[in-house]
Image 1 (cartoon, rainbow, N blue to C red):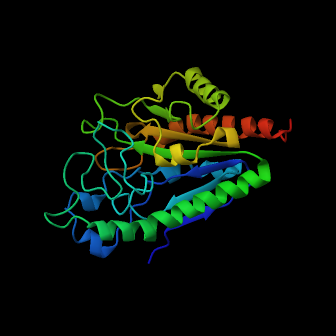
Image 2 (cartoon, rainbow, N blue to C red):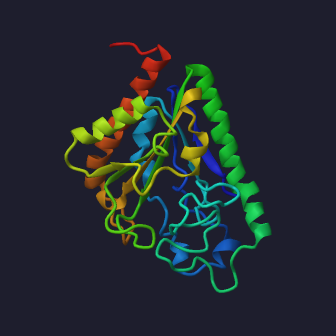
Length: 271
């Protein structure tokens, strides 16, 4: 079987998690899915390519192999809704972001199958998150867990209208320090090309909310990007020119994170 994830261990107090980058689907699951779902349209397309530079900053990076349609790594294992009262998708989604079914009639996963997927795919990813956060924190005293996501700019099933280009989520300020959130918002306020919001429709998923513990030196931030800024949303094709412009702002955000954390750790050095 394909490896569950790849993990690059870095040297900085920054850990980039890309839980919806995977596209693999086991054959036995794919055979039960609709043709439209087998295209895995709800993938956070190309985010690992957008964040390639993170290794240059010394970040650790974890990237899953399997699609969120197998199991959603950014949902709680008990599948409690992160957005009560709003449309969303679950731990093992049976509905696409379009509202269309993921599975052929009568082929949805059973509770026993869902439990097995959690143990096979979800648990190893989260064990790795736990271990790498602990390693980085032991070395640096603090760590920023950065959740990299993207989504179509318009998804009527999930939200009204067009999504802002940059969507920061910090669980309404609970998952990271106020100072770090202020720094990140300041970066987005300085640039004029892209729209942004903090803690709008996307406040951070399970990973951000579960692991973020700023009082204990663990800041967690989710960045949800509107895909229209770096790709064709229908064909899923990467647009290198647009992506390069977008990456400059993403890099500015992460460059703000690393020196901010080194200052807090007392190890920041001026060149």
